[in-house]
Image (tube, rainbow, N blue to C red; front, side, top):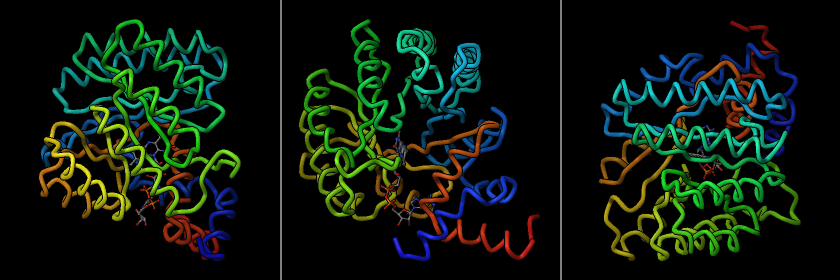
Length: 302
Ligand SMILES: Cc1cc2nc3c(=O)[nH]c(=O)nc-3n(C[C@H](O)[C@H](O)[C@H](O)COP(=O)(O)OP(=O)(O)OC[C@H]3O[C@@H](n4cnc5c(N)ncnc54)[C@H](O)[C@@H]3O)c2cc1C
């Protein structure tokens, strides 16, 4: 990242929320479930699947986690009623992982059971490295209780991921593979761009050769092209993997993946708690973050 971009990114926390909100609109479906339904219907009409995210993380009150659990169950029933082609992506810290692991497990179990009853699937999002072991344990516990409609996320920047993948492949896990978005120390995470790419492809090969279904979650042309080559080499059918992208990012590339005959799923976040997610997205796109700063200094907040 250039010095200017680093400066822009480090200044983001001082940008007022309304300005961040204005520039992050493209990444978020809206504040209500019906906003998300409209976006998902458009995606589905264009031959894209979706995964729904109710924004919110780091919940520290059991009552708040319980409210979200019930919201998720209602959302699953509504997805079925609206006949949407979407699964759901749920953050463990939203359902109480930082309060009590067992409490979090029971919240997930209720959601995964509801999803099974509705013929749907739950992806457990992966958060920062303080949660990795607990999240993998949560996933394995759900699998050991007989649920097959649940999947895990692996971050290619983590040095531990190869060991995790080797273990999870034996369980026939359903994976999403991404680079990873949280800031982690170099003692546990690769920092070099090409090193992360190499590990991404190494892990993808382990997963696919192990017969596992993978959501290849990236907007990086280099990784998309190397993934195309790998699925060709392994002679995989188009139902054995999918590509995944975030709402509002690289829509032209997204269309070209669909036209090339690959499955594609778009991550669709909605809700009132949009701030933390938006800041992460803006940090990945300093150009837009830069516009937000310019708006701040020019006094153009509207
Ligand atoms: C569907 C999905 C689910 C994810 N789930 C998780 C998760 O559970 N845990 C986790 O840690 N991370 C998750 N991520 C984030 C991921 O780890 C990366 O941080 C993110 O995808 C950026 O990496 P990249 O592979 O796209 O490569 P990059 O090199 O970051 O991006 C490649 C190119 O895409 C474009 N681009 C990327 N981001 C943006 C943006 N915000 N705005 C505009 N253009 C952009 C730029 O042109 C950039 O050059 C997920 C990503 C996706 C797509």
